Structures are given as structure tokens and as C-alpha cells.
Image (cartoon, rainbow, N blue to C red; front, side, top):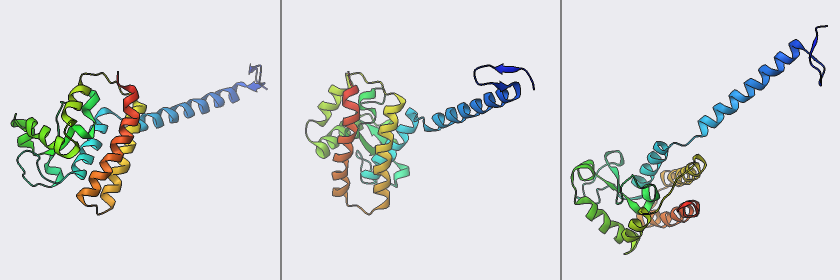
Length: 185
């Protein structure tokens, strides 16, 4: 018998090495799992954009050009640099790339459309929210991602009218605000 390297459990040197390798393997698998579950800001942007294009009509809010969802972009009333409004569905509508990127007055049209869909004070609320601070942890991003993904799947699986989709938005916004509002400073 070889000398004991672990006196408390009375294991031989070979068994200690095997045990260490098993622990390393378990740690490596755990790290890999955590890495797979990470929801980056880009991934959350992507699912948010898909959800916005799935919920709203397939037309640009500014010029009215009808396009397939892949031909539209997700336009922000308050820019993407403001985290408090970046993923808020009351700040987003689909727009054609021309209007979203090259037409400065589309933001004015976007504000009018948002007020029409969500109520008269929506744009003022978004501007007030944009002045506040929000930092999302991976856990918070994952929660929002899961909500948006769940509703996106529900919309894609069923044939919903526009009114039903707008009713769904109310529930999505409630769940989103339940997560985000306590984090806003």
C-alpha cells in the first residue's frame, strides 16, 4: 500500500488524484452550464426586436411601408443607450431601415404612434424613465428574456388578431415592470 496522502479519509495517493480529477470535471461542467445560461445584452436585444415585430403590424410606423418582419427594424423612441427604456415595449415599434436610420423626423412619428397605441402620456413616461438609472444583472436579463421568449412563442404558435396581440402586450408589460421597477434608481 502506498503512503497516505489524505489522512482524514484514509485514501491512497491514486484515489486522491482520481477524486481531484472528478471534482475538476464537475466544476468544469458547472462553468459550462453557467456560460450557456448567460443572457447577453445582444441576445436580449434580439428577442425584444423579434417580439416587437411579431406583436405589431408588418409595416413601418412612420412611412407605412408594408414589409415582412425580417425587413423591419425595432425603432426606439428613447435611444438604446438608456437602459431604463431599452427593452421597454412601450418605447418600441417596427420601422423600415430607411426611416429608422436616415429619417430624423421618424422619432416624432414614433412618439405619436406610441401615444396612440399605449395612451397619451406614454412618450412623457418614457422620457421620465430615461433620466433614471438601471443596471441589469445576468439574472435580471434572463428573467426578461424568458418572459419575452415565452410570449414570442405563444404569438408565433397561434393565429392572433391585432387586438389580441395588444391585449397580450399589457400582460407582458406588467411582468416586465414587476422585474424592472424595483431595480430603477
